[in-house]
Length: 230
Length: 256
Image (cartoon, rainbow over all chains, first blue to last red; front, side):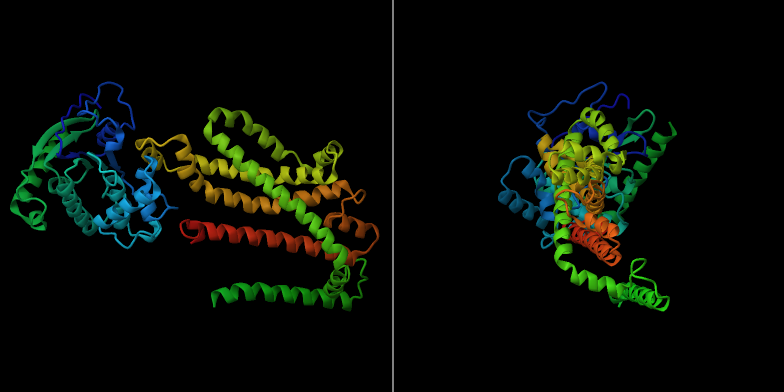
């Protein structure tokens, strides 16, 4: 990766869009502090550097198979020293918010792919992070499930107003979710274009089939084609 | 239907083989000191139950003690290995040496060195049973999902939290698989060591009964002791399989 520079304002929903190998996942991991950049730095607003303020949703659900949905969601709180009873109480709230009330005792393998991803999202949000990082979280899901999760994620974001950085290789997903779309190009990975989607129409299923949506998708596809031609 | 067949089919085969055996022994008038029939073996087992069960108890004690020590030490050492690559690299070769050296060859030494014969037998059984648990558990502790490890790092989990909440539960299926292998091996270790120790001395486990019966040409009793050894081995295996099933059935693929 080379010369990547980006500002993210609080409450933004930012998508990193690009082909595989353009370093978008690496960038996300650097932001999370899981990889150290060889050069360059991140400047945080005040004390965000305390990493408990960051939530991370991986490409796979990354749940502990030996723990129930409730125990999985409670994990980040318990690692931070929250008493078990309180952690489970808050985990149950978050399971309900991702529409999984009643599945507290279910083990990951008893849940469908979409439900597992919902548990994973609840786990990332249970600490109420200011920044939510997502690494192609819905890539492995079927389209119907993906559309529903897209809409539900957007709803959660509107309620919670965390800052979101969402890595994807889907043009349609990025236009539906993000206000700002950064198109990245490979070898070396860098940001080749930035597009904005005005928020007026978003977060409704009608948006997906509207001419405005189609126009944005066309613009983003074009930017992506340009990025890959370089 | 399926479960019934799974029990019924092998039982039927077993019964047929026993019947054929009994018939062959009678039809060809094979003397009992060459090959006793199953009926005679069964009668001997009942008649000598007093001495044989006492021997079984001694062998069982050694086997379980060895398995317990192997599980505890194997687990502890595997945890130590998982903490530091250097420790693992320095000690693992010696565990391998312990494993590859035939127990029959070192049993006499151990019997000479250990004051107590019971202790000597325990050490022999332990040496045989120890390695699968150590090796399996080490593999389990090291094969944590890298994304889960990253997740724990993101939340700044302590080394202890990673071990207790991530590595140990993840290594559980590996540990239990090791335990299942070691259960049978600790019995074999105990029997082999007894054989080396011979019939002399205070030991009177099943192996020394087998030896003793051989010397006295009491072949039916030898077979009866043999049956007990096998039955005990099967029992250990079933018990460990049950434990494994109860612990893993809710989440692990192997116990679906």
